[in-house]
Length: 96
Image 1 (cartoon, rainbow, N blue to C red):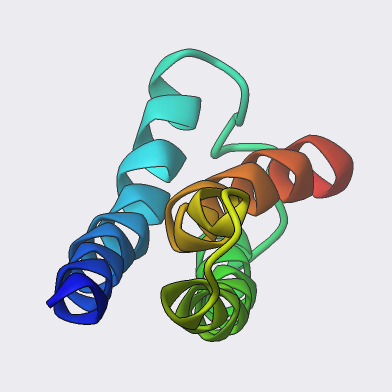
Image 2: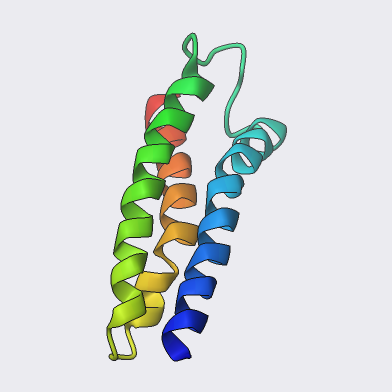
């Protein structure tokens, strides 16, 4: 039963993590971290594609967190939620 709960937690966190990058992209535009006029052509598409790869790798790391017993498994379960958003912010600051 605990594995099922952990797996469902991973699924919910992964879905939220997959949706947070586009929302974060628009929030960065709104708050002036990214200027759409000076950004390179297709910047949003490139960033979203790269963030998708980070999200998929994070889901794989989170899946490892389902099956371990140590307390730091929570950090692994939170990877699909945190890492894509962190990647999007860092990528935007460095490239735009």
